[in-house]
Image 1: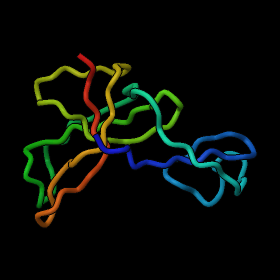
Image 2: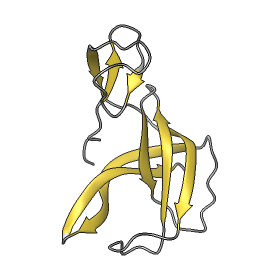
Image 3: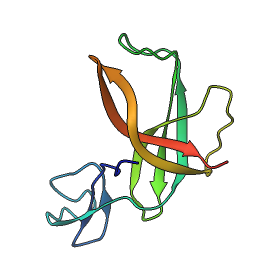
Image 4: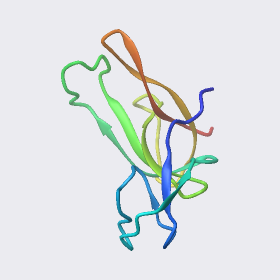
Length: 117
């Protein structure tokens, strides 16, 4: 399994986590940050199913969700289940960094979330 290629940033002044990077802290306007890598499993915060994809997608639909890692980092990723799989806010998911689509014949990597069964 590939390392999850997400880096969040924690404000040195107030401790707020940011992902993606911002030049200034959204809370206190501080400008110094520590890098934070996501750790652990993911708690699903919200999700949606997209059935009307733009031209260029080979899939019939996508399921995407926002999740929170155990250390507080929040990120959006593709949920790797079929259309009939029931999903519920609050469920625990396993994160991975893997191909989420093919573009111009090459794999595009991203965050993939898989429910723990």
